[in-house]
Image (cartoon, rainbow, N blue to C red):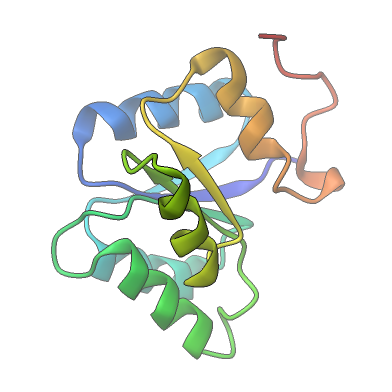
Length: 133
């Protein structure tokens, strides 16, 4: 059973790469190119996982996770930050803000799938393991 994954990312090249990698594994991908649309899609579609950039128009990633955590229907969604901020204190800040995980850009296609699927419930992970890195 594939997962429904919402990707909130304003950079088209990054969004296309993430979508390609996740669709290749059989997951259903929802897309939003700004934080406001991302929050609306999360509420409407209730994805299994949200992957969220931090720097975006309308609402940044911190505002997205704050709004998702504030609403009872989306408070328990698993939200992973995918960001170019890669200093040690950035990871701590992201996790303190309410994200469930943190991955830095640029993504490594060899390890990205396994890293993302680790946040999914076992029943939502494909039976075939992702390619080893």
